[in-house]
Image (cartoon, rainbow, N blue to C red; front, top):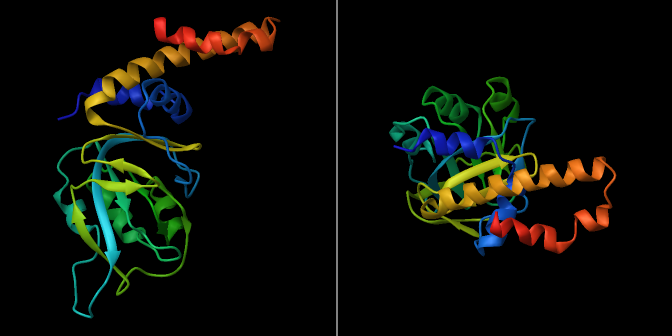
Length: 219
């Protein structure tokens, strides 16, 4: 079970700050293009990974993602869904209702959603590449779950940490989460101080000099 304090601390941060922390530590995790598909709240949690792919035959199959939702037993999960093709949905309102019933925190899709109003009306956060009307049925299926997936160029493993807000989505390797969050909190404090210094009349060129950011490492 995840330490709730660590997730609470992550929830208080912004993706931009976590991205900076990952840069300082030489880690991948920041993505481009996985943005909120409605005006949804920030999401922080642990990844439940799902890999999708093309349907290869006409045989009836269990609907994609539904087995993973059924198996969720904790309240810290974010569905991290890879392999969605351009223009075809891999998320919809029935899945969103099921996810809410299992206390899942949100979905991040390297792909597209339809029925987005259905997710919005129940307050379920969905992040992804875009919105479509075209159904996944008979087009794509779930290939795997709980395995590493590629999300917009970043490899995400089961139980990695996830943070998504209006600027996009960032992933943190689970073994480095506390280190990244500690550094991100230091960066946030430093940036608040820099903004205050500019408001107080200090030169922005001086405040934003590289040496000011590098000083974060020693704090």
